[in-house]
Image (cartoon, rainbow, N blue to C red):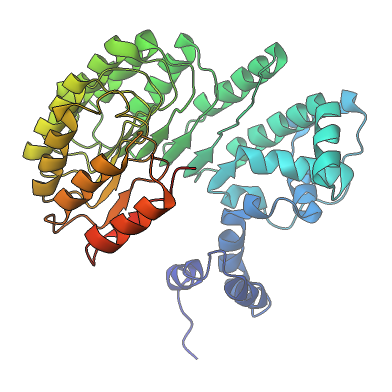
Length: 412
């Protein structure tokens, strides 16, 4: 029998490495075929092992991988660390994706076993210091041992962040920024309250890493000064495709900086700026590279919508436009009719979200009638507006074209 080279086997097994349980069963069975198959299957199984962190055996293996320096902060916690021989493989070295929240859940399960929702929240609050300390050591170990990390999901939502949590977040961010490898393609730091110094450290990563294509900084306490620090690097960046700066405090100055970035950067195709409370800048709309733009909940003025309408007349790239909760201040004026007329003629837009804009039946009818002439739009969301159940049914029945998926809902 012809023996396949490792490169071929690795590619074959990688095609089985998704979350389909039957395919994973095949991979586990393949471990027992021979040593060559085993060596090629192990990296696939462990590449996204943190998705299964609730398995206590997995957490045990990770804790066994800690070195003396990483174990030291855990000693004062008086927790019983696993004891045993070093694992046959350095499993953590195959990790390509780290998910911050999954680590916390895995630690909780390792400490206390399965818990219901109420018990989990209670134990988590009681053990927050221990969980943070173990998380820090595990993240440090994963960054030390793995040279092929592609995705870092460190989004960590907290309602009310304490000073100790801020301090812990800063330690985690420092670890990430000291990671020397340039294999990361996705970095999500949402909900981390970044200081100006940390934003500068982030720009160093953007300068050195030529593979990063997605950066998420939602609710990171970014203001115009911090965006200015980012902007200087983003002007020159040629790899980033997706940028999320939603739920920050960019303001008018920040909006102008974003506009300058989009004028100089020719690679960003997806931009999310929802919940930033700024007036729409003309330069944002003039960009002809963006395919996705989310400016939801920014309360555009009539002038801002005029700029948007003008851009949609000229734009030849935008496919997905999100304007949820954005147009509430412009109704009962000619502005909306102008926007509807422009949308009728646009030849690239496929997805349009106008939900939660106080649209009544009259204006919904104007919009949908106009869109009957549009041959490219396939999805329209106008739920959460001022439409009764009967009005929603009438609009769907009389004005919806065959190829348009319409999400209406109705007003109670």
